Length: 507
Ligand code: C2O
Ligand code: CU
Ligand code: CU
View 1 (cartoon, rainbow, N blue to C red):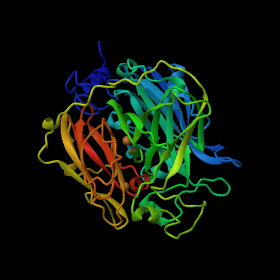
View 2 (view 1 turned 45 degrees about the vertical axis):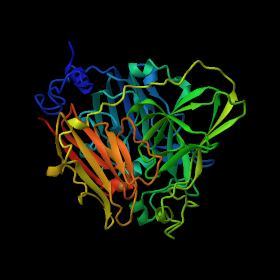
View 3 (view 1 turned 30 degrees about the vertical axis):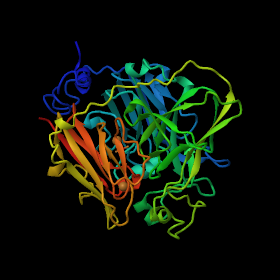
View 4 (view 1 turned 135 degrees about the vertical axis):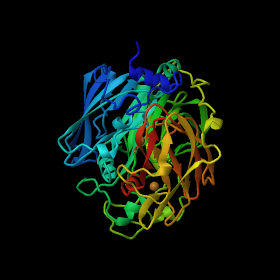
């Protein structure tokens, strides 16, 4: 017999329409009936703690980090992040049940959010569920998502920016049968690359928010770190790799490309593999977005190098205004690196030649369904105006309220809706990477696009809106009712309150 969580996952895949909902419905709460039946396949502990990490030469940098420990399951479920401050990479298969014991050993409250995962509201790491310092919280959920690259990070109200910046973040990888059948590169040929920017004081301490203007524009570092390392270099062999790139930065936008001008071969986005590979000269990646690349080093010679770079992106007056240099404010931590400035991200050098029998598949995954007709509001999209207003980040003129939901933020479980995020610009005109919790959406269209490097394909949970742009999204509210967040993933904007709840009401 299937238990309720398996039924929920099936419901998610469309095999069974709407079970009783979750956290509500006929089961009053996620703990009511299933404590008895929840048998985790994987069980682990994540401890958020204060530590030191040697990032730059000299004195180690005080950081905040997640330390992982596997309690139940095979070693591949929890992979250490190569001595960096990043949390361990968690790997699970779709359909597996996972229990995670979160211990908060930080000097302040925190909570973990599973970015991109479709989990019940009370497992989602909502700021109302923050855990005080010294306390613990146990997560239990079944992984229903498609194979893909997700991540986890803290989500306490007004403290997400500093906690992520301090080092709290990790990659969460889901695999499934559909993906396995493709025989994509695995093990050391399947590389997560977490891109972040940081600024360091002379004593190697991290610098965060030195000028009030940085709160409004978003904080920018002047050193690019990959997997917690500056000047990231890696020896590779002459064969294809799968690169899982996460923009784990607070506010920096990357314009990814290969330095030698050859195009990027894109195989996946936030919510997993695309229907088929896409070839693009460059890809713009906003905070929290992911892109998966097929990086084929075949045909290169020993000693040859390939460099992933961020190309210049003209963000207008913004790029010079953003940061202490531009603001003529205090200039701590050296040179200012504007948003949109070009730089190298990661260097790959062929250490030896190799042949591998891996082909880039022509078809990667089933295409997302075209269900525009099924949206209950197809003639009247739900609109959200994102703006910076008198130094306050607002969505439809409202700031975050912990459990507050407006009437126009209530949706019905089991329905699909068209949502529109609108960035009118405002004063100052800023980019806003908009993220919705609890689901994966599709981008139906973008109006007023300023650039052509957006990757609006496949399943997404975060979409970048430049000033003047408007995007139309297909949302699907299934399986779980309750309170979920949507917000700007510029973490300084989020902490300023550019975040709201939406409520999924059980039918
Ligand atoms: Cu990645 Cu609400 O967060
Ligand atoms: Cu999220
Ligand atoms: Cu924003």
